Length: 185
Image (cartoon, one colour):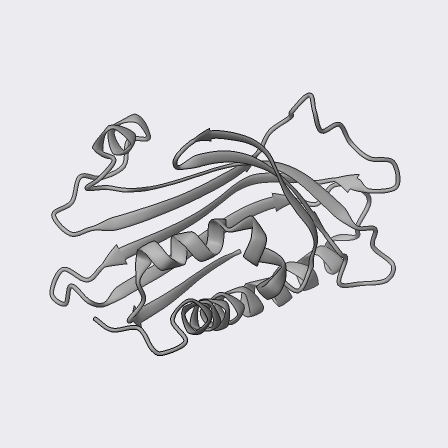
């Protein structure tokens, strides 16, 4: 699944906050059944447990143990170098997620442990208009279990169409909640 949202007047720091907030996730992610922090690794990295409710009655719920990290190329140049990302003059932010195993969170019976091979959000400042950003997203997921390919393709198509719209709406609602009087400059 991949998507792109262009020319969005978003605040990347608020988007990162919204996307990484465990407390707020269930308010905007309609498939999130449970989410909890397993371990805080650093200021910009953690491990979470995430379970989603299947959108189809004939598919079991899935869960993940996910390592997440997020950073800005200007504030975290060491991470840009570590992950071999480009050094650019304009700002960009990265949110990266991948499944891992964690001793304190073994698989749960009757829930299929899926594998998030990777999920990447890349928010890039427009070099010609510093208040405009483009959000790119790409994800590779192994839902596990036995699901026919035609159903998997339908699921990925559905989520590929829905995720950008839901993220945009979630961000707008998050800004309204955080700044009920309106966000200035």
